[in-house]
Image 1 (cartoon, rainbow, N blue to C red):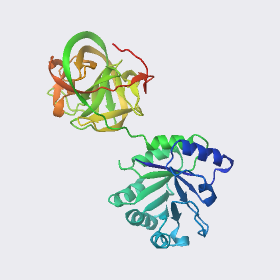
Image 2 (image 1 turned 135 degrees about the vertical axis):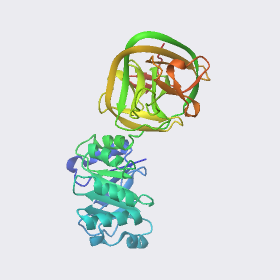
Image 3 (image 1 turned 135 degrees about the horizontal axis):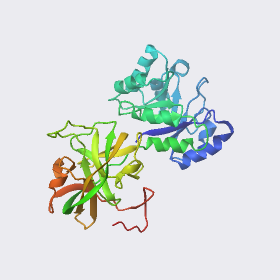
Image 4 (image 1 turned 180 degrees about the horizontal axis):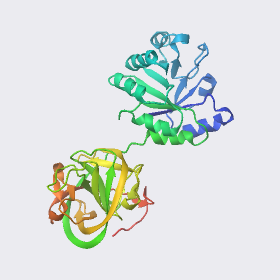
Length: 367
């Protein structure tokens, strides 16, 4: 889980409202230079004191973490010995090779490293993340807005452990927390048994081309109904008449659902460049990938019906062609046109109904 911290030092008159919002949004930490700001915060929020440009106070108040500038305040490790009830972190402003090396050392040795990169390039952050990859401390990187925070969370795939952002307005803290939780939970896949297939004639199908390579046992979940989907494999596996395209899933008819982000479903027809879809492997492990292009073309279609062990069903309408495939137990690659009753495929059977793509507890009949 990524950490979301907000900086309330320069908010001004909106400070009280922003802090209230941050608590409600379950922001992980609130950073200030005034110990009084920390006094009334609940125990669910980490209280961070950063007296930047000031001397250390005699009383740290309710602070859990004190971030220091070693040139002015002393070394975090020495301060921790004098104040064993507190955690100390190091602030590093990265402006050149020397301060970059200081940030790397901090990442390897300090409990907390608060990193402030002067230049917009993320290469220095990549270097620090790599240098601190096996360390036990946490890297928290300053972001200027939520868009930058999303980038920081994904640098080198690992991302910074956390982000510190000064909200410009009420609502920013909630958006930051949402970006910190942008990952998708793993899923429990189910073995489904094919009950019927049928050639249903011409229709429009969508190929989803992403900006990421899929693994050989990975694809996206697609289904005619939001409560029953089948795992469609990418074009990672060789075909006799065309090159592999391991970034592509020939996903199904345009009416079909797939999983996006924030547990929401999307129609294949509404995906565009920049959309997010959930890649899933045969073990149910997930990750968000970005759509680069969606190709919608008229093709013959085949309908596939399947049932789970508990009687719940799934339907998938695919391009009616041998090279369009789905995944079965153990990562078996199955040609859609060769599926027959009794065959097993991997699928997902969520229990919640959907309203505009979001899960909701209401009656909804799909057939």
